[in-house]
Length: 337
Ligand SMILES: Cc1cc2nc3c(=O)[nH]c(=O)nc-3n(C[C@H](O)[C@H](O)[C@H](O)COP(=O)(O)OP(=O)(O)OC[C@H]3O[C@@H](n4cnc5c(N)ncnc54)[C@H](O)[C@@H]3O)c2cc1C
Image (tube, rainbow, N blue to C red; front, side, top):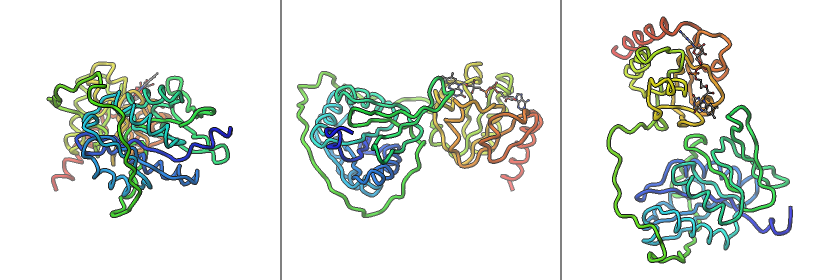
């Protein structure tokens, strides 16, 4: 490693917040960042931007941060790319972190690309696994590549910081350690409101039924094996009986049986429920990367060699049109008692 690169120290996590509430993915990344920082024998820091968000610094310490870099300004009240990127770029130039992690959320995806471009460094989006090679200090950023057919581990050899985004629910939530203390470092924002081209005129909350697949505790997901939109009702019935949420494979979405909001997987939502039912889903890698960390996986498939059985906790080999009605009936009985 060049002498220049050895000047970079610390693992930083962007603490995403909206209206003063931290995004869970930021805490998940602090948990992961803690492991990386320990391996690199360096510190873990949160980057906190906003207006009146000091309370979140304490939360970041409780989730494992040693330091929090806080830039507080009314200009940062609502997310806008330019001032947020400016704040992180300036912090980064001054304090030279070795690693920056962000959630692969709408905000994180927008911000990370801008920051990486301005810092002239690399960025690996949507990582599903992170580690470090202790000797070289490379961040090992693994993610599905080539349409999900292989897992690639990507490194950033010559530029710093090493930047990666990770989707919500991929990493474990760390322990919350009440009262844990850290160092709060306040920095100023070099921008005034007049310098920001984009103005926030109003916030309009989305109306209608929002699908929170990533927060669901029970998901009943159906795939192409269902055969028709009418048959997909069986999936809805089982979800209803269990008080769960419906999910789907991309094949079911593409067949028009359900909207894309319900798609689980690489190009859908990453989920981590307590129980995931995979019904008539073969278990293509692009589906597995979105659900394989569920606590319990129950798979129903007529093909004994289906890949879904490799990740299933309980596998039921059989015709779903026999298995599903029986399950619905049994669960109804059990749950009514
Ligand atoms: C870039 C890229 C991104 C992708 N992203 C995603 C993604 O986010 N999510 C996703 O899901 N896919 C994604 N895919 C598609 C993925 O590769 C698969 O094509 C898809 O997951 C297959 O869906 P499926 O399992 O429902 O269908 P199939 O693979 O066709 O499987 C149907 C299964 O149903 C079983 N079956 C049939 N009849 C019955 C029955 N009566 N009883 C029991 N079992 C039965 C069959 O044995 C079979 O295993 C992506 C692909 C690419 C290239």
